[in-house]
Image 1 (cartoon, chains in turn cyan, brown):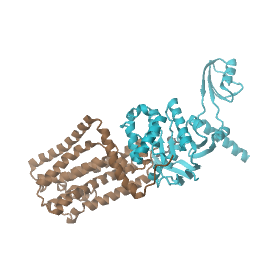
Image 2 (tube, helix red, strand yellow; image 1 turned 120 degrees about the vertical axis):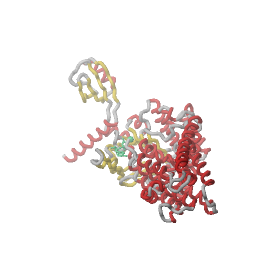
Image 3 (cartoon, helix red, strand yellow; image 1 turned 60 degrees about the horizontal axis):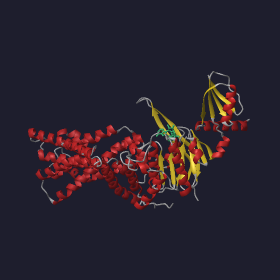
Image 4 (cartoon, helix red, strand yellow; image 1 turned 30 degrees about the horizontal axis):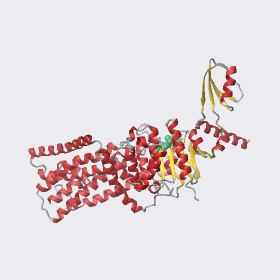
Length: 323
Length: 280
Ligand SMILES: Nc1ncnc2c1ncn2[C@@H]1O[C@H](COP(=O)(O)OP(=O)(O)O)[C@@H](O)[C@H]1O
Ligand SMILES: [Mg+2]
């Protein structure tokens, strides 16, 4: 079966001008460069990268909003920028920071309007709406105007709007951005079910490693517009292990702490950053045996850490080759 | 899950955009009708603006009697033709001027990922029947002027009235769409585009002779809004052009409408092709 998304040497530039009128300076920003990948039907793929990496630009090209500056792109066999309208009937799209719903309409009316836009037969609409209402627990706020919904409720409404026409591919740009822990997990569980029960292919961008941990077997990491990694989540963990960090506030400044299972990576007065390679409980016990601790904080790795590690690995690899 | 959609052909999709537009309008009307008091007040406010313009016209003629050879009824005819075309365009296409806002807010992106013409979605967005408030007084003025003005009602003239109104509507709607396309380039160009349409409207409402030949020549050839009311009125009244422009121009309104619609369509397509969204 042919892949549902095929991108080859995909690139997009923007010319931006800055400065005062008449003295404008124009320069070219490359948002995406030489990105090549394909996604098979039924996959859940995470498109990961720090802010400004080019994630949204890639999604906009995939959905036909932006025309690529270079490269070849096929989504469900169609060329997005030329066959945008046709493609729109086959895919569902959600942008985390904006809504496809209408602010002034109750959620139910917004969804009804969506039905007309996608020309979904009334019976199909009713059936799918009932299904999604149950899975996403929309019941309590179907009659509420969209502007009064919480971010989490609105995101669930947006997901419903994107899925009423039973698309084969769901494209999500930062679907969990700004959401609380409970909403995040509701949406993650829902996406997993959608994928396993209906075989919907899901491509999501995120800079939340939690999304990736829970959802994606495969991840692509993009940074400065380039694809820095494409493979299994476990392979990413192996090539760029991202340990958690224990931030320790001592009662007084001290030289870098030396205990088994942790390395001090940064010291600022009484505060020290310990990169963990062992269980945090053991490390905390070991530190408190030798130091007086005022406060503790455990920090999960962030996408920036992963990217930094990918580069460090690449650099050492190429140094090894040259030397 | 089975795919619900079969891919419709290109022409069928163009046609279905026409079908989806009334649906969108209906949904919006229903939404607006949920606040009947506000809808009523806004409609009345719109009607009052139109009525005060009409009152100003009556006032001018109660003093001047005739302006550049045009009496009250003739002027009212010119006013009504452009007023009706303009408020029809405002009713159905007025929302396109908000393109820049939709681009900035990102809502235009969401229109692009739906399988319906983004122009239809843009035009229908936030449709409110309150704009009927403008149409009704203008329509009344036009009907009255058509009855009172000195028109030789041949069959041809009777048949051409709706054609001229349609052309006027298409001309206004096209000029608007062209104005919206400018916003693809400059997301803040809404003010600039408004000077073309609203300024243009005031000009089409009074006998063009008042404004002097140079302005009129420019207006007739460059901003073809003169074809919305001035030339059609000369035709209906069977008057020679006081500015000495060719007679043939008075039959040109439908052609101008088609030409402008083509220009608008081309610009719109080119705008979509070069659309760059917003960096978030
Ligand atoms: N419409 C635009 N005009 C100019 N620059 C843009 C535009 N869209 C994106 N960019 C630039 O392209 C780069 C990638 O942006 P984006 O794809 O939004 O990143 P991400 O979604 O990963 O945060 C950024 O440097 C951004 O400033
Ligand atoms: Mg983004």
